[in-house]
Amino acid sequence: MILKHKHLLGIEQLNPSEISTILETAESFLEVSRREVKKVPILRGKTIVNLFFEPSTRTRSSFELAAKRLSADILNFSRVSSSVVKGETLKDTVLNLEAMNIDALIVRHSASGAPHFISTFCRSHIINAGDGTHEHPTQALLDAFTIRQEKKRLRGLKVVIVGDIIHSRVARSNILLLRKMGAKVVCCGPPSLVPLEFRTYGVDINYNLDEALKGADVVMMLRIQLERQKKNFFPSLREYISLFALTPQRFSLAKKDAIIMHPGPINRCVELSAELADSARSVILKQVENGVAVRMAILYLLLGGKEREDTD
Amino acid sequence: MEEKIKAKVMDARKIKRALERMTTEILERNRNLENLVIVGIRTRGIYIGKRIARLIQQAEKIKVPVGVLDITLYRDDFSDLEAQHMVQKTEIDFPITDKDVLLVDDVLFTGRTIRAAMDSLIDLGRPRTIQLLVLIDRGHRELPIRADYVGKFLPTSKREMVQVHLDEIDGVDEVLITEPVEIE
Image 1 (cartoon, chains in turn green, red):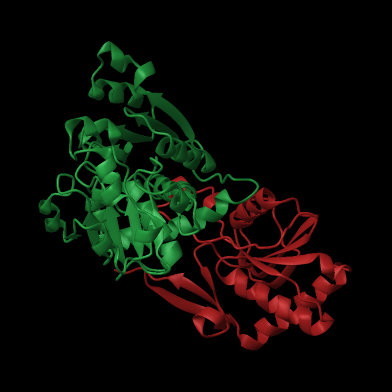
Image 2 (cartoon, chains in turn cyan, purple):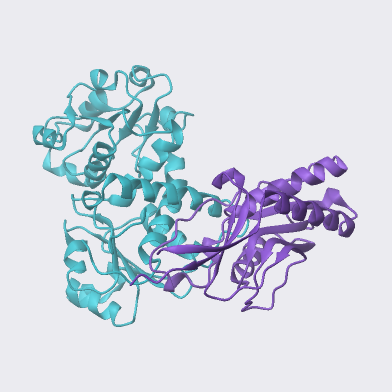
């Protein structure tokens, strides 16, 4: 099985066997990052641009390391030091970068659909590294990879996603992926952040964290986007913490071998207690390690072989 | 693509004889067997490597570790391939620095696989020596590479294909020469 797509715009376009291909390929790349010489020559001569219009530590460095470990050259573009501040449009920025003969663009943008828009006029491979509140496919893939590493499967697991579901591209991509792979998903959080419409994705919704946690195999905590809380989606942070923060007492309601995940950055003592974040049940740093392997696999699968027609 | 079998050049008995002879040659050349490690190239090189390790153990009571090498990430024809190759794991869980590495593959043809395998090994450490063992050497080298231990020299035309089948994955031990059939 191989990947037929030219771009990775979202989990929505992938079928279960393509998802499995990416996860299996990533297994092989995990070993490369643990070697003393952490580099293989496969993408030598390819040029990749990290086009980030929003701040990021993990995703940007993870893609940068992934590209470098495959011997590709990578250019980091950040909004503040670019001509975007002089008023250049997104399309012109991309066309100018492309005129320098690049092979792939890794795009993060605050507008949902920006990577798709770019893919309509661009020759290069486009990888969505998070667009608005739409999707963050590589995060969902690395989360699935981490769950598989811990639980050996995805099918039949109960995954509880807690927090700001409505604004979260991480949640959306994870829900799509987990449902495609046969996991059961429960979303939990204040009703203002977890609208009932999410049921159309095939997930259960529960506004009581204690009930939602019962029998969970995986607890995925989402970051409370404090910068968005000026719009008052819940009465106070203190109330949110008392109802939805993961504490050791609450976590004991989940299965004995349940794991805790978080896409980062963590607000310690908001989404989960510091004690749990650093506990043996937390796989937060494994997610980060796996992120590099999963992104190597994606770059390898998209940029490998002869140029393909766009099938998206 | 259809293909027809032109000849069966080795059967189970001949393969066994060739492996036994090559094992003797390995023992002759490597006085210090404690320093020897075997690395098989995916897929069939792994099984040939394991058989050689078993023969060494029978003869000398020394257990030689066997690792697995996947060379996909080191191929030089990567951007010409029609589609991606599935990358599989390299599993060498012993250090190879200062070791005598016996690299094992089923068929030696252009030499490009071996070039990739050597580059890959050198990224993993600095072996004292790298020796090459192949079951079949079919000629047509494109790089200055030769094997130290050869099961059988098999002159072929470039059109022909050599297929090594091993009991462990193919259910039978045999070496076939096949040729593609033109479909009208």
